[in-house]
Image (cartoon, rainbow, N blue to C red; front, top):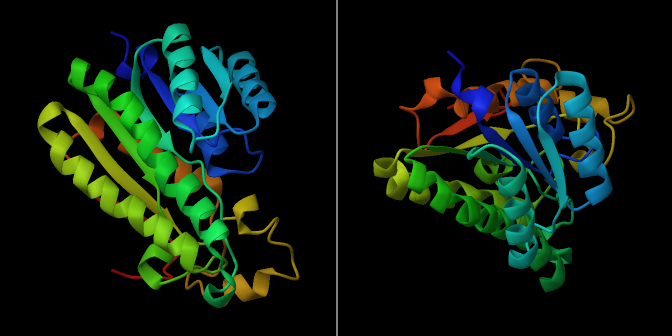
Length: 255
């Protein structure tokens, strides 16, 4: 009998970034039989990744351009994915931006941009897919948080980013509580130092010692390690887990 994944679609926002968690997650899901909808601000990148997934893994994949902070963009992109692919049963909110700007230098424009893309984007995409989850009595949502929300700042980003990721955690717990009776789980994965472009570009040899000094495991995490955790949480074996935040941080925060 076919597994649930083989006739289900996962939407991954931020999946067009070449070295991002979203893209690593999309690849892992496609490898294991999911149909995948890629949503990214860069529509060309989203379509290219979708084509690569289809060619490499033989799955259905669609790429759509959208600014996740725009309700109209989100509705259009999700509608196109729903029309083209099997039922959407999982959402990975991986789209986001960082902000290394110190608090005293953060103006309202930057604050609102960081909150809007990270937190409002998570709200809008989750709100758009949720009615379908409720109708089918099954759904999985995993959003990318950050250790920054727990530590008051990250190894790179500062107050605006920490606030946005904190909002994602609180939002996810509230939605998890409301949606649990409807067969929908909502969880957060909170990475620390992962070598992605959201860290201000590559963590080159000259930048690496600063990051490694804060990591008890003595190395930087990989996008595929984060993707593996996300894949578990959107799978059928994780139905008893909801409202949780999973730290994947190399020991930078214990507990």
